[in-house]
Image (cartoon, rainbow, N blue to C red; front, side):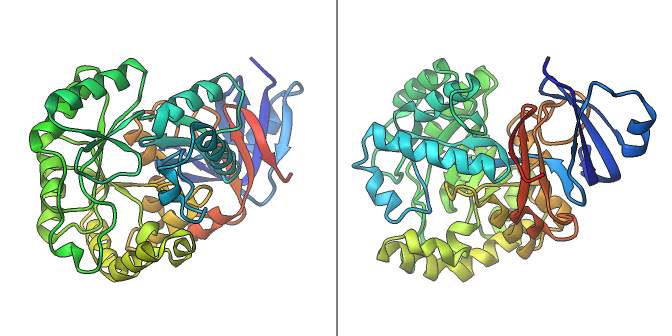
Length: 394
């Protein structure tokens, strides 16, 4: 079962609403949270066999959940998109190992991977479960599905419902957690938001949804807007990833269908990402920045449920939480985008995403109070995953 450990902190964010517990204590046993209590209540009982970790004035909270990652990409590396086409499996594996370790040490204890080459995500999940690599817990999508005429650095080309069905079934055979479609372009060229093409038919999208439903596996779709967005919503896609150019009509449809959005705002809003883009990529980001902010702000203010991801900007998930607040989300809702709501979209809400008895001991400690200022997530001093400490400044 492992050594029982008591973690003490000035503030502990507990339960599904991240309720602040002052002078709190979390008891961990065998990789799970055994109890959540106060320091005073703990000290009144006999816990002689319990190891103590005092986190001082820090805030103890659930480990963050990255809802949109790719292991074969690292957005911090120049020309990462262009180099993907010529990279060997060995090179991609090294990229994955580096990004995974950086993610975990930054407080990301679970990562939802949305399509990688050569089933590298499936392999990394196996290695993580056996303890052979330093990594967050992984949820994987295997091979991403794109139209044969369409966009994606990571999706494989498909034409027709039977090709889509075949790949869905092979992914399911390999034990994926989510099926991933690439429906539209990723970024638009200057003026390209006036018409956004879609590269999969409604029938192809519906085929993936049907195959997933047979085995209770959700479908996520890379989609920035246009007819493809309507097709995804109407055919039952659970999460629309990006939605950069969603119109007012699109937002009304999203609200009506209670469709979730995977916000990856930094691709457009973070100027620091431009250092790793080609000149064409920089032009696209700068052209779309103001337009995308307006569209995503509309989504957030309309109350469309969302989760947060970096799209391979490893170790920088905190920036997405900050952008969610800039777009109009309150701090609690933004934090839920990487904790309780993220766990719900991962279909792991009974295992991760909150500090409650019986859940996995995935915990991080940060300086300051993220409920007051989400930028506290920038400084993670303590990381525990499955009850094991991977980072500690204590």
